[in-house]
Amino acid sequence: MLNVSAKPNAFPLDPGHCALVVIDMQRDFIEPGGFGAALGNDVSRLAPVVPKVAALLALAREQRLTVVHTRESHLPDLSDCPPLKRNKLPAGRRIGDDGPMGRILVRGEPGNRILDTVAPEPGEWQVDKPGKGMFHATGLDQRLRDAGITQLIFAGVTTEVCVQTSMREACDRGYDCLVIEDATESYFPEFKAATLAMIVAQGGIVGRCASLDALRRAFQQGANA
Image (cartoon, rainbow, N blue to C red; front, side, top):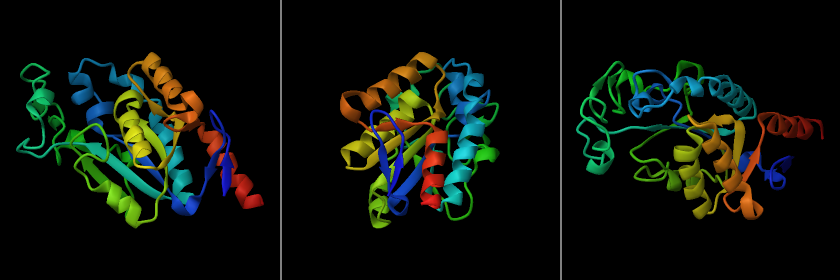
């Protein structure tokens, strides 16, 4: 068992039962022309998190953690996209509409691809989710349980929407959760700060929060023990 320095208290990491979950590092959210931009966001604000996620992935692979990549995506016929979700935006900017990177937030389209610098490697899990949370209509919970996973480390975008939703869902299902604060990002810095504060409030009501360096130190200390 490794101790990761975290807020509000140390995270007891058990590498053999822990998975890294990288949420929605896809072109649709991080590059111009995708769903993030269609919502009116400055997508350039997410660019600095990409090398941090890449470094976290390298660490997880070095430590042989299970790695899970998610994509928010919908079937081409949009049968899994509620009308309320699609109709929030005007025609031409909706989920399924044609955009600069193909149909917005649709599986198999260029914009729905995970960025090359943080792309899944062979053997890593890939989960297409039609909702904000990673458990909705994905079967992921049972797959994690079958693999003996009891702890989840979170990274990705955006902090206050898909990352937080997935982490809260995981907490409700009994997973011990840790978010890496510098490997997650939001279009709105104040939303990221508020989300991290909510996660660790009340003794870590949702989970714990740590830096990438703190996680790296924990692995180094474990190797030297």
